[in-house]
Image (cartoon, rainbow, N blue to C red; front, side, top):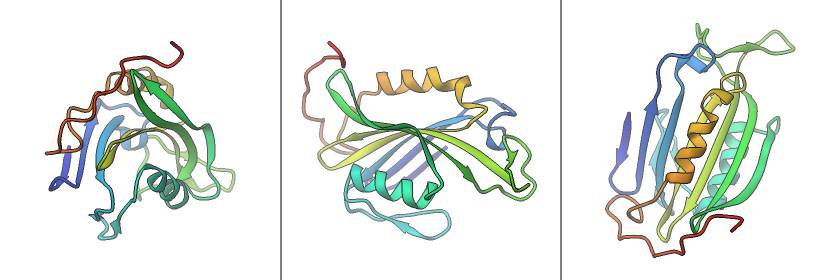
Length: 177
């Protein structure tokens, strides 16, 4: 699926085969582009805007996951062949659409929830940033964790966002070398 708003926002979502462990039975990865300070209209009509990766990270953790979240992997720098990502994995209980039955759980109060376990890799660029996301459930996460890691490790931006200039060249080294 793709969601495009000119060159200031792009979302490409890759949906895998049916997996009952994933919310709504749909495992996926997404690659998004956000231009700094550009507004983007969400499906519910609300607008979002980020000044950069740190602002995205802060707003996402607060607005999407809230105070009850748990960081399964705290925010850290991840350097892959000279590209410096912000990487983290967050766990929280999410809302469930009425009638949803795949990838749900019942919490301690008896409420049906989406047991989210989402991984993010944020790559800053001169005019904006890319966000790679693996929105899984706690029970489904291990199934495609390796593939998400491969996506992050192989992601090479060809442009500074859609329609942008080629990115500045960087040294080709892997973290730990």
